Length: 462
Image (tube, rainbow, N blue to C red):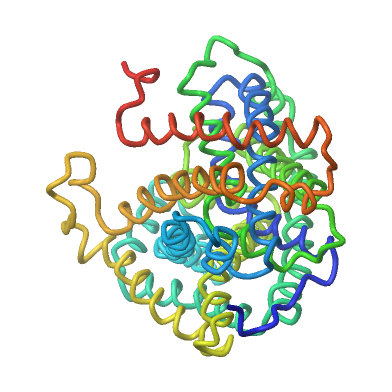
């Protein structure tokens, strides 16, 4: 039973900004453009968009619907919606694991968010000036080897997130995304405009939009599906919670389409901001931290007004990280508050304290604990440190499990008429198509992805 009347988003726009902020993270800024080039260029873009439409939008609708049906946090929602079913204890457990998953993600995500804040500071203070690429690699390596520095910046990112969450929906989440999201878009567009005048746009268009269908295979499909799931915050309880704050007069299908479109748009635009800079300077393409923390600082240092654009770029990364950490932090806090266990402020402190311990262990696993591999008894996980494990198990495995169970829950367990009324589509072909996708297609697809995750994906076997 709910003890607290939940706040609501003030408008559909406020929800959209928050949901887009959740979806737009570090993966959109540097990972998506890179995997486009690695997986067939324009062919991969078409495939990714198809995955977003066929799987992504229906699953966003599913999680928003579960959240808004009872307008309570995930554990209570799963419990109430399965009332009278023999499987109710199982679904209550599903609600619980859906809240644990984002906490596991935050265990490593706060560390990476700290890196972005550290680099903003380093560029402002001139610590990255007059360095060659080999030297920036050393700077990054030195950061990884400095437990005190890592924990300081990780703590700062956590404190910012906890402070925003503690202020509630309108004064906290809404106000933060109303400031951060326009700034994020402004910085991204500014970088694109700079790139347009600086050259490299033609190469970027060819790189991202020239279809190479020979590179499309089942592995590419899995890559596109995995990227779509992570990018749209599926299976992380975010959309469940954000849906519970969504007023009843706002259309769930329209909001789901808006989130999916904006998230994909930002990912594509990020490519036009980053890759012209890389091509113009004749630098090697690399994925992940190598490109962002080792290659780009050298380029920013060498180009006109480079310090300004360097600060803007790492602020962009920091804003993208913080809007994501806010959404991942909210499910646990909302659950504690709704049950009357703590006030929102105390819940933010308690969750924050637990996450500080977990994120500190992640930071230490990059240096003093780097040789500690907790799961040596498992062949797949035996060489992974704490940070690796959190990313592998939470951001890959559990997100897939949660998304699969949410689809089964809404498709097979929740009353059909209640879902029909909530979506507002009427008993139309569109509703029937969505329901078929959720009941049949999504479980089969995610089931295969989980087999691949566990090492039994026969279609990707060498």
